[in-house]
Structure formats: C-alpha cells, structure tokens
Amino acid sequence: MKFFTQAHFIIGIAFFGLFLLTGVYMIINFPELYNGREEVRMMYRATHIYILMSALINLMAGNYLLQATQFSFLILRKLASVLILVTPILFFIAFIYEPAKYLIERPVSFWAVVLLVAGVMLHSLLNIKWLNKNAI
Image 1 (cartoon, rainbow, N blue to C red):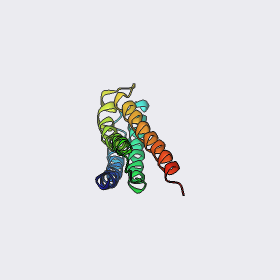
Image 2: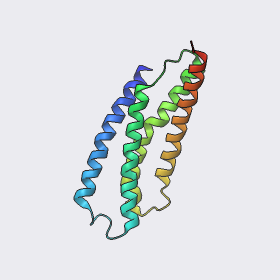
Image 3: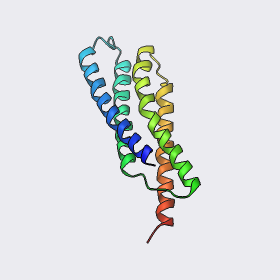
C-alpha cells in the first residue's frame, strides 16, 4: 500500500500544479480562447475545477489509506486507488480536448467523474467495513 500512498501524493501535488498552470493558461488566452462562446468558456472553467477536485481527492486518499491484510480488501483498495489515480489525467485530457472540439456532451469528463465517484465510494465502503472489523 506504500506505493499507492506515494502515488496519490505525487499525482495530487503534480495535478495541483497543473491546476495552477491551466489557470494561467486561461488568464493568458481568454477571451480569444473561446471566441465569445460562453458555453466553451464554462467548459474550460468547469474542467479546470475538476482538475483541482481530483488533485485534492488524491492528496486526501494518500493521507487516509488504511492498511488491509485480507486479500479481498487489498485488491478492492488497489482498484479504488487506481480509479482515483487516473481521474486527474482524464480531466486534463478533457480540458484540452472537449472545449476545443465543442463537445457539449463532455464524454471524457463524464467518465472521469464516474470513475472518481466509484473510487471514492469504494474506498469509503472499505473503510467502514475495516473500521467495523477493527473497532476497539
């Protein structure tokens, strides 16, 4: 689990930095970037915030990974971590791809949110089960 703790911290810090860079990118390139189309501007801003959200969730996941000894817990916890770890990458892809292609349906963002929710909920359920099993 040490690998996943470190991975969550590294991804969290790296994508927090990327959040700051995407903010600078928008400051420098707005309003030319969206050419007066407010929906495109909002797509950039929303995905910018999604990058921040996924970075912060990764930082928190790195703080609260409970040690699992049971094999099924370990596998499910790794799966939950992988789901959370890939979401900042997907949100960055969405930041670059969706507004530029005017993809109002936001397919990349949609699946990134689904994976993030699934990873967080799976971690939460495993923590509840772990805490109940290891309660003093």
